[in-house]
Image (cartoon, rainbow, N blue to C red):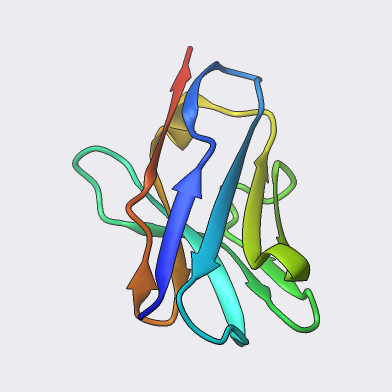
Length: 112
């Protein structure tokens, strides 16, 4: 059984920054890739960013490109999302993803 636990969300003003973390536990860990998704109120869950675990190759949604950075830390089995220049439209619940596994989500609210 795999467990993903996100943290780091909160309330921030537009233009501010937040860092999200996702700790993976529960089994031998050697994923191909992990990612971040988000869901705004009344909307579908959408892709934010993904990273290939071994190479560190990244891919971003156009809406966050240049503002968000995804990274991973081997020793801590942890995935990060560094979010800068936040906008009100970045508001939502952010989830980390590994294959079919999802965390419980962490709320990010950006005020204008």
